[in-house]
Amino acid sequence: MKNINPLGLFDEHFLLERLTKLKDPLVKLEAHIEWQIFTPILSTAFNKPEHRSNIGRPPFDRLMMFKILILQSLYNLSDDQMEYQITDRLSFKRFLGLKASDKVPDSKTIWKFRETLIQEELIEALFFRFNQALDDQCIFAKNGQMVDASIVEVPRQRNSREENNLIKAGQTPESWKQKPNKLRQKDRDARWLKKNKTNFYGYKNHIKVDKDTKLINNWMVTSACDHDSQSLEPLIEEADGGQPLYGDSAYVGQETIIDECGMINEIHEKGTKGKPLTDEQKESNRQKSKSRARVEHVFGFMTNSMKAMYIRTIGYVRAVAKIGLTNLTYNLMRCVQLKKQVYNVFIWG
Image (tube, rainbow, N blue to C red; front, side, top):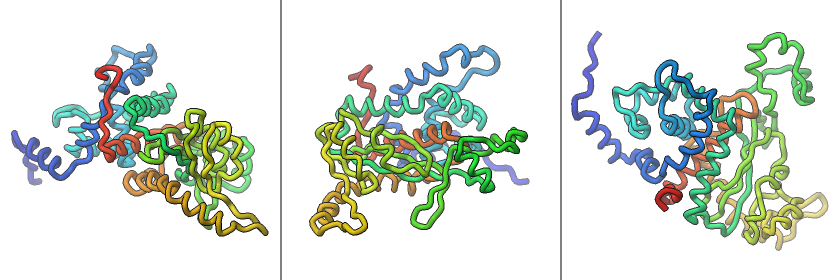
């Protein structure tokens, strides 16, 4: 078997320079974000006695592990693929601050790190910590908000009709209880939804987006069958008062909630049987669409660039974590697009 020549002394340096000239997106991501803003939250999880041990090898740097989760969300990679890609790709190593000779976290270590964040319920805290940094620097325009939801699919379950009926009723089929390994592979929280004559199985990512910057400033996750309007109340708040709220006709009927927050109702009007929209209402909807349509750009980036509309998780809790990391990763990348540099105002401000 022919031997593969190792990299020369300066080959890695030249390769990295070449990657930079080819506009490696991770270079800009590293330059625009002060990653240390996440350290205090990560420390709250891993400084607890149950997560500390002097046995075995020293743990990997927590901030580096968090950046691995961001890479994983950006490229929609499994834990096994993440381990391989870090080992294989110089651009990943540079972003993570790893040298060619450094040990790379294996897939089980990546899984354990993410599971710890989930158990400590810190994914949402990390998202809002970044948004706090954005708010401190007045990056949010706050000239209007947009709401929308998109389906995030998970591996489909091949259940019988009787099993599905039991799951919908909040029960577990008896045959599953006798097979723990099978039960662990069954998602009892995801639901089916038929949309445009196509069946989907999974969850919904509900987001509220700043109209001008297209940054996500709030989100929540439900099963796919939940109606979009049911998630409006948790998304908007009194701090949004005075801003117009844009959304499609799925949010019709939520006028009271919008008024209570002091927002200006710019939700699309909806015709009913026997009472179609007037020409004036249709024109009003067209004008609103010029603003509302911007929210589709957010889901477009997640769909086309991040491939994030399909996740390999089981259960609501893990789905929330994955979708939350997707939303955070989108905001990080959006800041790069906006050419906004986010730094730690509490240290250097």
